[in-house]
Length: 155
Length: 170
Image (cartoon, rainbow over all chains, first blue to last red; front, side):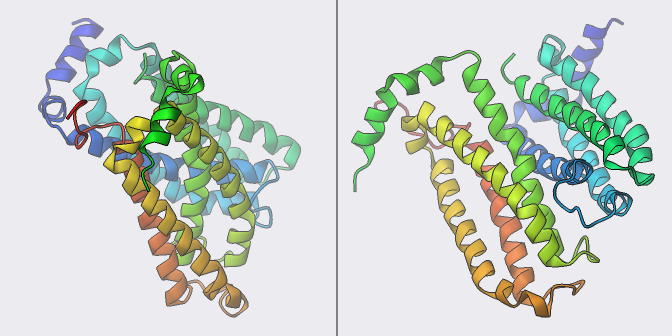
């Protein structure tokens, strides 16, 4: 089975078919995807901005990151759970869409980066010289995920 | 007041047509509008969660509001400009779209809710600044803010679907 066949199988799954054939399911899931985007983005941003010396600067980085972590994980789960049925409903279109592949690549990178390097650095209460590049890398990676995601609709 | 002649004129201006027919500009404006949601609604939602007593309970409310609202307002500015450009790219389509009209109405309500909060219970912030769970009126403001902005995002997304539009000529 090559990759395209796998994607054809994805599209033929019960969930993929149900979402594709329904008038309202895809828009409804899109709305959920956007709302969880706001929460995920907010949770990522508030810590990244803090590391850049903006926002909640009176809070220690490690405490802020720990407080936001459950919200970030919940939003991440929400955006994945809403993303999968949308993908299944148009898997073959995604297969031929360059932005889709950029998005998946960047999503894996950004998620792994957030849970490893960024998490370790925030926990270690970094000074601003060490925190700023870690925050910038996070902003670039997550913006890339969102940007590429929106462009699946266009290309 | 009939706005339609003005809308029709706007729809025919070269700038409107240029954005509407562009290959890259329209997607860029749209993507900016969507991603800035993180900056605007992300910050507003964190403040609302604090007002509801669901998060950051050890951080004073005045600190969350004072430090995150300016960032959120920068996001709002970008969303307003990109949103105005999106409207400008298809005023006639937006004019006849029920989701657009509901969205604008809800934004007005969200604005009134914010004003009521800032000139109401927030004036007495010193008496509840460090309360883990703020007073009922503050919780209500946070609840309505979250509810309204979620509904606004949903209307914005749904605006792309022309379910209730009259077909041309009808």
